[in-house]
Picture (cartoon, rainbow, N blue to C red):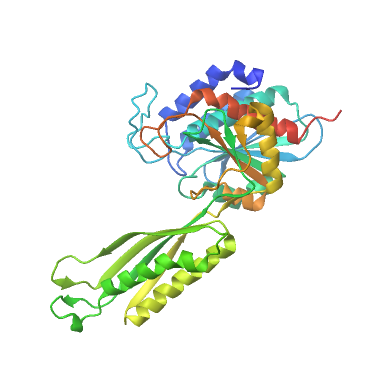
Length: 388
């Protein structure tokens, strides 16, 4: 796999960093030791600035190039998942019930590798901000860093991120202009009626009847409110009610998720969801409450920056190994908050065969880390070249 020669020269160091991070996972915003390890490495590399505690445990390093120019941002996530690892690796997680099952240990390693190279060579103008964020999996660490002044303190003109992808050939890269990942909104519906003896339903207001009706109508929201060229998913995933065969319960509970790409369609479907809940409850003489748990917005690549990112990737790994127009996915990613504020692009990097993301048997492919580091470095050098 093509990599920059200097980065290839410290590939073994990168493997050591990654395996240390893998052995010591932290969850959510509680990335204290992880952030400290990252900051220590960055200082060893000789970056110009290291700022800690942004968005609780986020870290930002700044490296100045040679001569005036804009600032470019490169982002990695840091948090692990609440899962028990089953890989049996010598460097497996040492923390019970926690593991890097999404490859954020690899993401940090790739950005650290780029930092080491860029701090040594400085073959670029302007400056680069290296953003290490907590709580990507749950909590919106990217938004927390923005709310804590990330882009006020580090006014990047553009921002980029990588996510590893098991199953895609190692070293292959994928992106797309426009939406690449969906917005995610979970919802809960709490229905309150009047329970009673199942032999005398006329004396009750049955919440189960309303719940079944709601689910049936909800399944039509996408098909009857989404245009044929749009995409959305609404899935009901839980219904809970009742305790016995001869008792009509007082309450029922429905849970589900909504995934969309278009912000206007997202608002339309959320409005229709509310109308269905209220109307169906009223028709059955019941009370109902809808709670929408707003998640991450859609991850929308800037078309120009996505094309630029694909060109940089093609120069590195070859055009045959880059898909610049990959099919979008229904997963979610909180890099979306950064792309709402700054133009940029989200790129997938294949790590070859293996267990899927969020699987207890998952492990990052260390051989791919130098490719990601080289991509990050080339983004900076290509976007902000030295003046002749």
